[in-house]
Length: 219
Image (cartoon, rainbow, N blue to C red):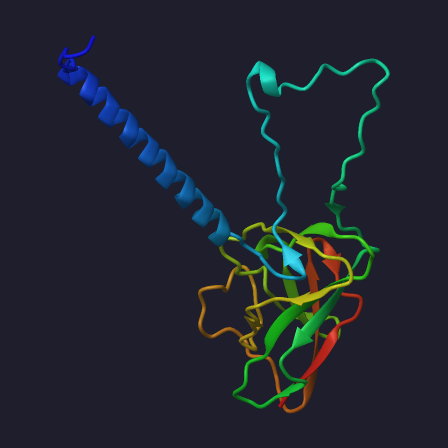
């Protein structure tokens, strides 16, 4: 009524109001931080290779936003995003790559893998170190395998986009010695002969082997 002084709330009421304002601020900050993280955390964000991802649509709660129950006559809508399947032998081509065709006595060959999706559809493939293999041979004599002394192999499933070519980023270096699972820690392993000797590199990745080998000459 007029003239009646406003009633003061108890301290507990003021504390609850301050807590509500603080909770709103915390939620706003958390939402901004989450958006920034999603913008940064995009591994394999490239035109030709990307990490597989899935999207989920949140269903709002409450009677006002609920969709009506489907009837027997309703037909399912086709998915707008087709499922990406694993690559097959007809989808990919693997090629052995070296940084040179011949090497002087003190040069070490750098070995890489080129991978192409020759199909018209995206497909997934494991390009991790656990599926990569480099083999250097001279005739029927296998001189070196990258898997003989490999440590901590890992998997990496990626999507290889249709019609694209990719290559391994960091080459594997052959030290020009004969490898063996029993000589990984030895420093005096037999050295591959030079003086114009010919060697061939074969590679495989994701379970697919290179159709041809790459010849290198050691001087």
